[in-house]
Figure 1: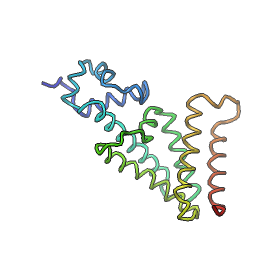
Figure 2: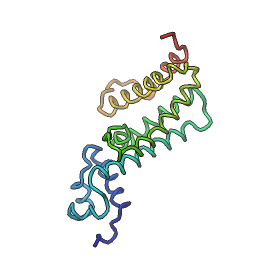
Figure 3: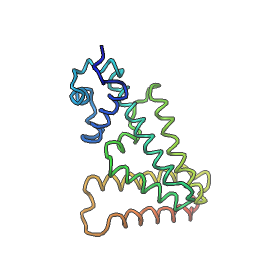
Length: 191
């Protein structure tokens, strides 16, 4: 019989707590079981093992990132939309580094993760639409979206690792990066 108060939803919530407190890589059944006050085998009544739990947690994190991107974009168009979505991504990463990492697509290449990957496409589509408004040629759109994602992810990763120790304002540096990147994308020199 399942432990009173424990359900699939509560196990995912406990797993999110692990991710928030200890990071994506720390998500194990043992860590969740400890928080639930049960033995690991008791979790199998609520989740189909660690890969399934990691997919559930990643889905929550992908949906959260996508919602933040959609909210940031709102009625913005082009460069302001790209900047707002980049800021929203960075905000999520600073508030919840583990959730940010979970949303980055390091999922197994098996059919069970297909739905998760399909959900992640929505976030990419939001950024792609904004990049398209920069008048980036269609044949360069994927390159441009990858450039924005790489710039944001690189900055965020360095920031979270404490890589920006100089006294100058990091927010200004981030905005400088994204503003100049979108300016460069708008210029779209022939490839």
